[in-house]
Length: 105
Image (tube, rainbow, N blue to C red; front, top):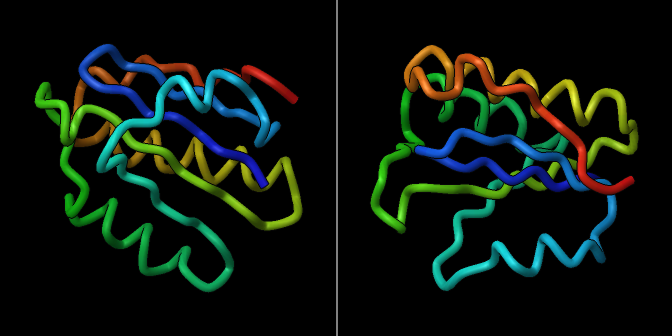
């Protein structure tokens, strides 16, 4: 499983490969949006991203999000995160030039 932090309007998408990463704890906040992407949920969640269900803006309640991606295949999990970023880039121009980076393995 990987976790990816998506930040807006300071655009960033960062993949964390270690659940115990201290940076993950730093970004947690009350009411944090956490989206689970698994074999069971991926179709529904990608449709939500495509339809604009998940909003991003400058307000604290919608300025970031965590993705928890679990497919037991690290390469595919990162590809899913990149795909979500590409969906967001269609609606939010700050995400267009974001390079998905990794923080911890």
